[in-house]
Length: 334
Length: 291
Image (spheres, rainbow over the protein chains, first blue to last red):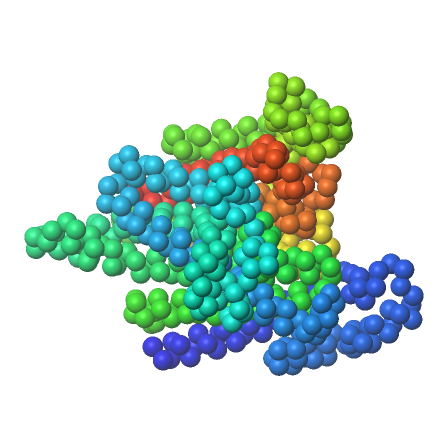
């Protein structure tokens, strides 16, 4: 196992170097002069030359990359052109919002998807199974930005059950400790804060969690069904074990191994979906920060946000791979 | 032919299943019908759309669905039904461009990597690993950020994002095909690498390409619309579905129809391609067929 972990970490380092190369070269090599973009069409040649020098754009491209990588390793991505803060600080401030949203959405999808998938597999081709499969197919096909708008329309505007935007009401904020409104509210111990933060999280979490929920349901059902015909399950039945015991101890436990991987891999979907969800629900997270940074051509923030997100994604994938290798020893020897 | 040779041949070239036989499945028929309506709409939209999708009529702004405007009107008095109908053309264009880019680059990359193996394979797969290390929308956003927001750029970005998926699948297929007898025989009679890849390996990898392209078509529609919704793709007043949704975002709380119909159109098209893609995958995969 140790050898496997070392091998995967070495691979991770190379992937991260690749990721930094993609981010850097996409921003610097593709058509378009960064200095021109920043200063606009009316900038003089002198102004452009001065800015290129300031940003190091007059250096050869490989030197620019080395300098970028060196600074990035120290957490220095330059200064945000919009807020004048260090770019990494802006990103770091927005990150907890995205983190809280993604974790909440993952909880929704796992808490809903696994039991639904299990029950659908226990009664295959029943009315329940058909309903679950049809609804989950609809869920997989749902554009997340439309689902968010519909959630706002139904639960926010028509029924008036839940707030339609922001992570807290304007002017109400628990003392910032982690940057996650629910966690900070819990730490503050104020029930009003806790209730408000949870109310604000419900619609975004369900919006973001719907597609993963549908995927997890389908995969859990499929894995359960394929596991039911395995020899060890037949043996368990032959030994006279009760059906609930067979399902829970022999089918579900083994079926959950690939499901765990799928759950972990949903993070990419969640991080992508978070960009749209944060835009719809006006949440000050990483996705919204990045969209605003792109629209304002705030490249230091775009680079910092892209690298941090990719890093988190790669790191979580590594943890998922390792947990899978831990659960299924055959993986380690491939 | 000896029994061993016969068995080898059977293993090498599994019996082809007709693509059309997939339509025996009810879900495939529903999917095919939705996709067919969508494709038909892209062709006949100018003939059947009741209004010009760009025509503004401030006197008729934000009208509820009625016989005159079946899907209502937006804040500029433009007919929503006409805009949704014309939006199908942008959706089809995004499938052709983005899915086309991914299909071409991904298939070439996977084909070359799988066929040559060794360092070519390692280099190609590391590139794929790096591209897969980004959440898909993030990579698309970085590319659009660099090229500048526009519909064409968003399609290119989505195409690049989808490339590694094709490359992985095709490589796997090529690895399975390249050691089969007919490929070895083609090598033995002196066939060039290019000829073997194009004439023997590629046609035998057609099935996963077809399944992947169908499933990706729906994904591409959602992703392109998503980028337009974020202001990174098609720009107003284009009747692109994502752009129409974004434009109506400020009014949809009081005028529900503005966001409802374009979103429903995206949902239906994605559902159609997903149903068809799932059915194709099940049809060609014996293991899934059994399930």
